Length: 89
Image 1 (tube, rainbow, N blue to C red):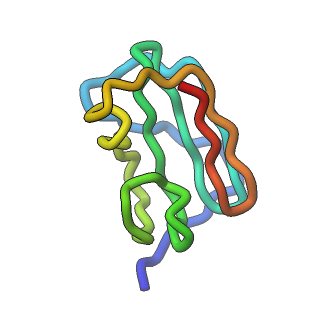
Image 2: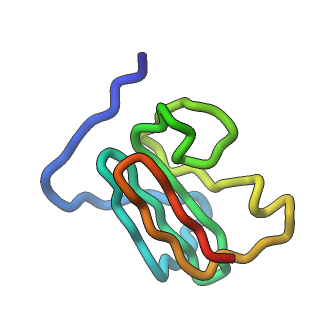
């Protein structure tokens, strides 16, 4: 099982290629961020597939959701629930 650190305070986040973030949502143990370019990055606990990477892996590192890019979808809004992530494209 992957160890996911839990912090109760804000921390700087390094995103690849430093895109500008326009929206963020936090779930119970995961987080999602939308960039101004309409890409979605997720990280945290992924046991139920809520990170959107096609598996149940967890990650302390923000990763772009490649499926949305491959489908040519632009993310407008994201809302994280306790163990879910809802995306409006």
